[in-house]
Image (cartoon, rainbow over all chains, first blue to last red; front, side, top):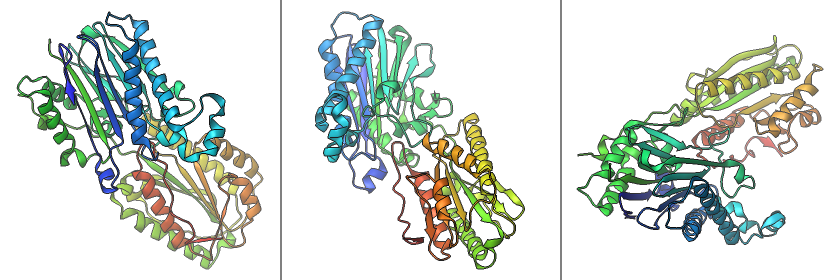
Amino acid sequence: MLNTSRNWRVVGTSVTGTRHLREERECEDAFAYVSLSEHIFLLAVADGAGTASRSKEGAECAVHAATSAVASIIGAESSDEVFCRTVLERGLLAAREALETLAGSAPGGEREAIDEAFPRQSLSAFATTLILVLVTSTWLAALQVGDGAVVVQLVKGTVETITKPDFKEYINECSFITDSDYQEHVQYAIRPLGEVCGIALLTDGIQMISLELATNTPYAPFFVPLFSFIAQAKLNESELAAELYKFLASPRVCEQTDDDKTLVLAVSLSN
Amino acid sequence: MAALDEIEFVSNPDPRCPCLLLLDTSGSMQGSRIEELNRGLQTFQEHIQQDQLARRRCEIAVITFGNGGVQTLQDFVTADEFQAPELTPGGGTPMGAALSRGLDLLRARKQTYRENGVAYYRPWIFLITDGEPTDDTWPQAAQRLHEECEKNGLVFFAVGVAGANMQKLAQIAMPNRPPVMLQGLMFVEMFVWLSRSQQSISRSKVGEQVALPPISGWAAI
């Protein structure tokens, strides 16, 4: 899936993990790209929890609800820093509410009682992470709950993590937007867009091969060739997405990680 | 021209899955009990070392209480380096002091992981006894254990061998994970279960809670 806002090229793909293939489970990641105007676009990825029975629906619902909510409130004019944050938080709230609706849960304090009465429909069955990125003509703003990361390439050539994997103390336990305390686990970052020439949103299936987990530092020999691959003019977006898919499904990658993998990349073509 | 085959991967250290064995070597373990426990430990070593991932990720430590008081026979090592000890029984049952020593060892291990940027799974303490604490510090040790468990610091399992004071063991263990009675002297089966459980945990991914294999193969119902 792909498209191009003016000056930016966006390519994204999801690949089902080899373990999910073995267990005949579908890919529980989801992603979305929405272009709002020449200068404004949104990216979202979500990773449905492996243990939650309906997390695929949860992940799909979260990315669509969040991007739709942001799209409906953002204007075409350039937005200030405070507004970017407010808008992304509204997106997160919309995702949470959409999951509550999906789960048939009542908002507010009655939820637990309803969960008990309808355990199959409990919110946690739809457990998912969410990463939401807004690019305006002046800002790059990112919001994240749970695992995964947003990595940017700066014009000066370096790569850095602006939101990072938020596993709790233990590596197999992480935050989801369906947690009751999800608002305590929201990461937010903003950068002047002029500094940024590449953006990557990734789910945890890609973390192990692309980030030094001790410090959450992005591994430049992973990201730099990736961004320059996407920036090349020779291939169009659908060809690039097909190549990216082949790469993520290749034995070389799957030997390292058997989880679902989603990567959404945006590169500036003006630099 | 940029190509995707130029991409290199970072190599992260394996996440670790710590498991601490607290073993009763008091005088009452004399005879077939200690023999079967030793055989179980040997099986544990062989079984866990067959799993390529668990060999690197599981870490095992052994503290005994009884013969020689409280002894740290083995500080945490990865499973591939684990050598099953040959235990000999004797003396009392200083379970409280052993529990305190174990909690200290675990705390130090987590600190080492953090300092080295190594991710880890929730640790297990696995206690085996055929008696009851003979030291008077056990209530304090149990309280410390409960505090740790309540903040998800670890998971505690207690196994009683025939003759164990199960009521006291129930006061030490967490109410949601009461002590289990070993069926006969099925230490080998119990350690195979422990090895399998550790293998599943060491494979688990973010967001996953591992379903443990059933304990019916070695626990008395």
